[in-house]
Length: 231
Image (cartoon, rainbow, N blue to C red; front, side, top):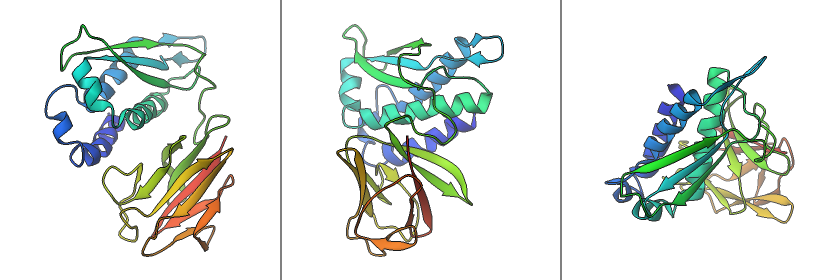
C-alpha cells in the first residue's frame, strides 16, 4: 500500500499544520483515500486484455464534515484523483477515462459517516497516460534524478510553490522560500512568477521574475526541478 502511505505523508503536512483542528473529529481525508482504494478493488471489471476500475467517485458527507473540507475541497479532490491514477498504475489496472472525485452533502448522514459511490464511465475525459496531462490542462512534474516522482495538476486558481505547510506545491528544499513562486492561469497561458524569494527562480537555467511557460520548461528552485507539461 505504498500509494496510501505517500498520500498519508502528504496529507499530514497539511492536516498537522493549518488544518489540525478541523480533523480532530469527523471524517479524515485518509479514510477517504483508503475507501477509494477498496472500492477500486471491489468494483474492478475484467476485460479481454485488461482489468478496468472505476474512475468516478462521489463522496457523500454530513453537513459538518463538508463544511470542514470547504477550505481544501478542490485540493483534496485533486490529491484523491492522484490516488486513483497511481493506485491503478501500481496494480496494473486500467482507467477508461480520467478520474474524477466530487463531494456532495447528505443531510441524512451524521458527523464521521460518509458514503462513496464508484462508477466506471467515459464521461470524465480521456484517460491519463504516464506523466501526461489531459488535453487543455497542464501539470508540473517533480523530477528526481531525471525521473518523474510526482505530478501536480494546475487548475484555474494560482498554485503557490514553497516550503510553507499547505502550499499548493510543497517542496522540502532548504533553498526554497516559504512562499517562493506561483503559477497562475492567464487566458490560455500559465505564467510563473517569483514571489520575492531569497534565492530566485530559474527557468531553463535563467533566472526569471515572470515567465510564460511552454511545454517542457524546467523550473529550478534551490535543487528542486519541476517540469511544465501541457496537454
